[in-house]
Length: 526
Figure (tube, rainbow, N blue to C red):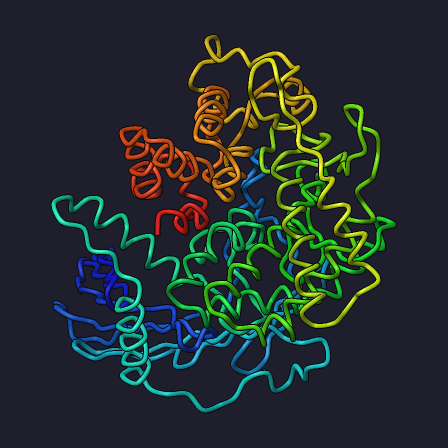
């Protein structure tokens, strides 16, 4: 089995021996089309037979998924309740909860193959809209294998011309980088209706849902190398803005609150301390729109799509945050939230969240003035941003991750055996939440995004302190510590973290690649 990263093709060859002693070689070439995202294309060839009878090839449309019992919240149970309806050459599956439907048909799925003959089979998928006629979900015309293959190869040729990173002297690292880049290209939504699943197209971990990963870890790569894909991914956020506004109303807030975990825009998180409470996703999305504009200069897109996202999230912050007395002066505080560090839940004034919200508000002011909108809100947004609270421990000289983090006992790292990591699989959340322990970069992530707002001395102090209490149980962590180690001048540590990032899935560093690749980490490695 060979994955051709350059062309986006999977080549496979199997020697088959039947119970009667008949042998043949099955040669396969397949690809998930990046130019026609609804297609998965396979070509089969029978070779080296020791018999003359034909071989029957068939592809029945059946759902085959083993039920996996696990306590890992990152893994889908696979116990999906799907209702199937069979039609002439396709089937439709409907999810019990969401009532969303997908149609799948197999084109050229059956044939009697003689030696040296080939069969090209195409799997075509289509997400059905609510008002779509289920009797005719597909267009009947389809190109042949050679045309589809040529499209795939040309698309990948263009991708590598814009995105390839060549490394000399380290073939393992070179493979790791290109492996990551391949999956970035393969997994990105391109139609403005889809985004980037946390596991890409490779596994059922997180059940195909979208998170903040796209905006903070994946979009920068596309913004700088393929802004059209970046634009499509951001357009998805504009498309689900109505659902975000509805979610804010459900929480009795103004504006919009984007779902932490979603596909269709509705919140699917089951555990709100590590789901809805991560309201920083609003500001993460705004940060991505802002970065897109700064790099591309596409003000028209910001005016037509991005600006309303920025304005509605700014409304939410003014509704959710509070102007209160804090440390003897008036401050804008954001309480009862969870930052990037999911081992510290429902905290007050998470530093990362407050820093990102401040940027969200300032960008809203900039756009309101530029486009002549929401003039009546500018002064309130300005006050909230200017008075944003950021905690600081004067005695230790450390930036506070949140109001209470530094007041808690440090996790007993010395007595925690290696097999007890990741902590979330072995300890109750209440035990984790009451300690100083970080699942991933939090304050350090904020300082990576806004390095210029801090002195080098402060960056070093905060880095050294938070590194000691960070487990890197999240795949989103090492890349951030790599960048910041480089910025504070620790090149040895930066390189070590970088290698962990670049080779994470090839080495199965997180011990769960069986559930799919870690797409966000790949975005940082790229």
